[in-house]
Image 1 (cartoon, rainbow, N blue to C red):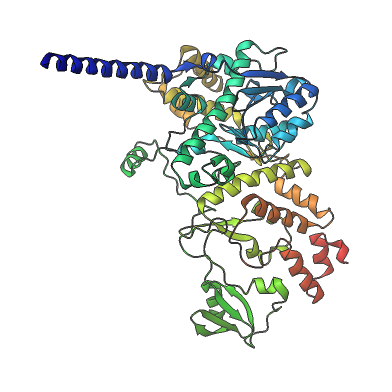
Image 2: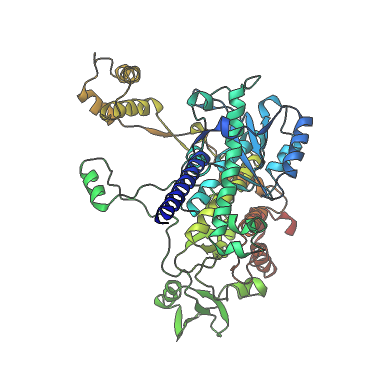
Length: 570
């Protein structure tokens, strides 16, 4: 009897060990690293070179994106001698493995079906650094890519290290992408793409959508979003993605300890620069004090801050008539009184919080109409500019600035006003020869044991130095120190044209004048950010209403009207 029990126990243990071993083998097999060629052998890839085939492929993609409302997205181009050629290839992939490779360099124009999908706000284009690709597509083909999502935002949200596409693919999907420089820098404008190029391009787009779906599903399981709509996160995808649409992902830099920075500064590795006041400094103090400014008869004129109110008092132009809240009454008749909604706007008290999400901890002033345009407006339009200054938290401020770039690029194309993205379009141009010499000297001087320059590269840099110092036969350390300190001279570019000025000049001669440019930016802010806490009576047509009141009261001259471009009022 005792022997039987022992046999049964041994048998049970053996079975348990066997099951554990099988489970281990299965899991190890399941989660092993696989090359993309093996792991993604189920992909259906269509290479597109004609408009007819493009229409067919786009129809299939649209049909297959109804559940996840997203496609994997990437672009390829050729870079030659540091100059980027127009985008040659656009890759789109659905979650179930259908990939379209659109060879733009072989098509006369971007087919309407492809353009429509890329500009469709209801379908997310997911990938890594998609906002950069969006910029290039706009520059090269005037295609305004919309609803991009950098998957690194979601990786960070799910507490993963937000590395590149290859790193995320390896850690999340256990798929190893082919990232050899030979394939990445291959000829994407060739008459025929190689089998390896096709696999590489399709894999990049497909892996992006796979990672996106994986991260969204993981996040939904750990948040209240999973309780929404019968646990279907995909019906509430917009709520998750709202803060990341068309927002560039900025890699966070390692924060150094104060002692380390001090040590490096003493060793000359860190420049001790007294920085100028940062224009977008985060405020911890309130912007709105909501003091009251009254006319001599006690009529309410507007709310203002403490400093402005007390300025009138200190100049003996007003008296304090109340302290809670601070109320100041003028001793002189103001140029105008509050009229209509436009006047009542300035009488309202305003809250110190982000107008988009409502955060109250800290905020940054946001110029709804960017200063690069407003600074060229006539003075009559700069008065009462506080209407276009709102408060945003740091996250919303960053998002808003990113989305502003789309409008700036549209204005650049519409008004023939380049954004000075190239060095030869900048306001100031550096002496590139001197800069090249200095860079070469520093590379030679500051190389370390871990980063020794190859012999060919060293010889190339030394030749650059010796060409500038022909009297020297060899490159010495003293010569490198001198060359590393060479002054790089900047001079004003005679061909420079201000983007902001050209846009303002264009609208000055357009129907409706500069008021239309103001309204364009206000409408963009409302549609792109969807603010929930805008001040009451804030209006897209605020300035037109304000100036019309002044015109009707005879406080606006014909010269002012002409400066604004409102000739229809004359």
